[in-house]
Image (tube, rainbow, N blue to C red; front, top):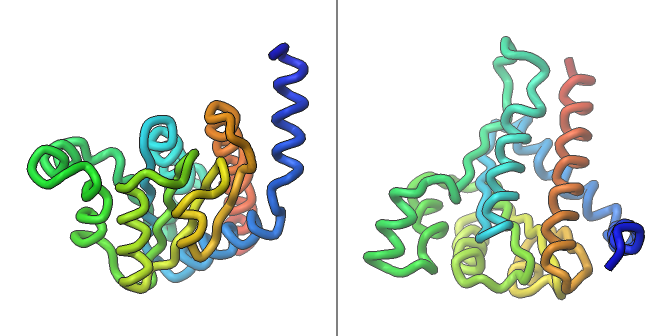
Length: 189
C-alpha cells in the first residue's frame, strides 16, 4: 500500500467511527474526573502501549499546570510488570488485569480496555469483573468489536481488520479525547 492510499484508508475508517460514541467516552471520563474516580487501563501488545500512553496523557496531558490540585486519577494496569509476571507464572495470564482490579478498584471507577481484536481473555475477564463490581466499562476495540465490545458500557469501535491501522487510529482517537478533556478542564478553571 502506498502512503497516500494508507492515509486515505485511515481517513475513511476514522469517518466510520460513531462520533456520539467518542462524545460518550469523553462524558464518562469527565465525570470520573469531577467525581475523583479512578480510571484503569488494560491491553496487550500494541494495545498495552496504547493503554499506558492514554493513561499518561489523561493524567499529565489534561492538567492545566503543575500547581493543579484537581487531576485525573488514572492507573495503567499494564505497567505493573512484577505483579503481571508473578500472576502469569503462578495463576495464569488471563488473571493479570482482573486481579489488579480486585486489589485497587471501587464501585464507580472506570475500566478502559484497549484491544484490536477485542477477544484477549485477560481483557475479557477484567471487563467481566468490572461489570460485576459496578465499574463503568469502556472498550476501545477494532475488528468486529469482539467480546469486550459486546460487554462494555461504551464501545469505541475502529471498524477495521488491519491491526496496524486499528492500533494507529486508537492513538489518534485517544489524543483527540485527551485534547477535548483538557479543554473542558481549562473552561471550568
